[in-house]
Image 1 (cartoon, helix red, strand yellow):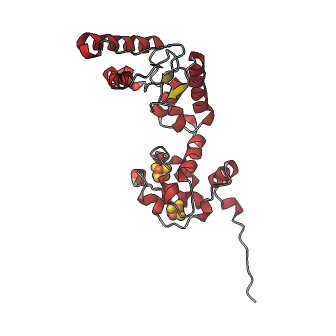
Image 2 (cartoon, protein in one colour; image 1 turned 90 degrees about the horizontal axis):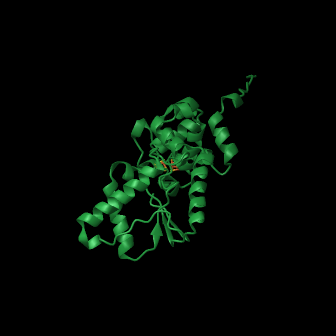
Image 3 (cartoon, protein in one colour; image 1 turned 60 degrees about the vertical axis):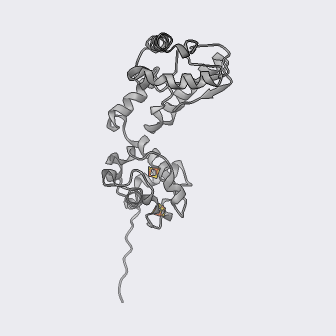
Length: 239
Ligand code: SF4
Ligand code: SF4
């Protein structure tokens, strides 16, 4: 009679998979059929020798180190095309987001983490708020001087009670300030009553991409408080 042996593979099961399931039980990685539909429409397929199907196989098979060490998790744009393509409705973008949060801060892309850390102080470029105000006023003055048709163009800052609040990608006042003008002209042409704020004016939220929900919530909350303090009824997020 042949003697059967049973091997306990519990300890071999993927640790990351367990952690992700603990956070979100609805993510059903084990339902994957390996059909590859997710990879076919993914803009990050092939980057860092990875694609969503391979990424998921590695996770399911417990290749935790390979997954955690792959910078592909920062190439994923979180567009969720894979979720819509997947016959099993697996949301790989959601898994990627959880993994980003599991990376120690000192092992995340430095520029990304730095932008988030700066944003929690004020804005992602670290430019002083006074400089933002100065640049807006300087660019506006330049338009008034050089474009007679736009002599009455406005770029209000901290205008109490304006209908619309507008935020601003910090890159523009920092490196290409003239790029702010076309939107000012559009708002002016359609008669929109709007304002910037002199604090928490940065519209890009890099903390969304580092994987720590408390960080991006903090910056969104700061912006929301600013909008409320100004009494604006509508918040235009440019990013
Ligand atoms: S969410 Fe990420 S993995 Fe999914 S299709 Fe978009 S880039 Fe690819
Ligand atoms: S589309 Fe869904 S089922 Fe198909 S390989 Fe991708 S994750 Fe697996």
